Length: 397
Image: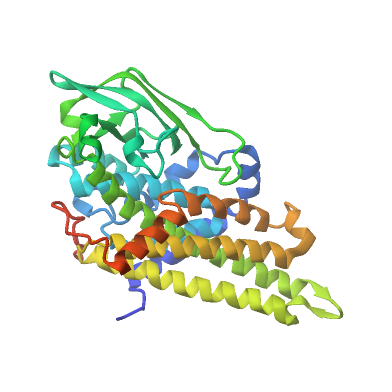
């Protein structure tokens, strides 16, 4: 296995790192405090080709492989989780789902402008009473001629006030439970749709998160993604892509914690020597480095399976679980290394710790992923290829 970046991947990494250093880091403390980032960032993400980095060129994207998306997410989260989240949701959960499940007409209408960054996509699965238990959702979509009438509510939805298009899941036949869920492409401009941001979050404060409301929203039948009853399958496939980006972002957060801690270790002295000379501090630094390297390998393994068009639910679950847990631990250790100064806004580690908690919960809690991995090992769970796999990556597409 060749672990070297291609020239194209290395250029992407350098470009994303420069963008993070020049445009995110000088402003993120203020954006985090204000509860939102400058909307002009969306234009810059589009200009740099980041909004469709792994979407084929014939659908408006940059045509890079899926590990290029991981590289981008790692570098963006090194700046702040809010920016990785924006790309994760727009690309991983929405655009890649359209690429995998959409008709040609849907791809031309929705995927192309999203890959170009002309439109923003989001994802609506979680509800006030339905998180890990997807079948507990209460949203419904009733067929009425050439439309479906959608009613319900979604919560903890990233980009709730910023996205143009939403991939939304609702019951078309609740008696069938998981097999009665259907996916729809909903536009913000459809009558009966509204959104509301959640304020004063513990972390990822620069990101837009909130609720979606559907009151008799008439969704054209051609906006159904897949067939009736395929919604649960589509949602789980979407999460394979979303979890991949979350895991890659967690790698970037570990890197940010490591960089901040190493810098502080060379600045701060106690007992007559730099704190980096103390063995218990060295242990925390060493654990961060180990976590960074291990998480990165798990992410790239999942990405390689995506590149080959192979189902990767098991591998992506493991990468997401471990990378997010290790990022949370790295942030806690970085805070500890900074001591009392960890509480100060003069240092970024308090923000890292706050941001590190949400990824341990969303897109499958650590407990859900623990059960999944045990079920695989014990033979209780086995994945089969889906009838529509994410397209294998081909150079030059």
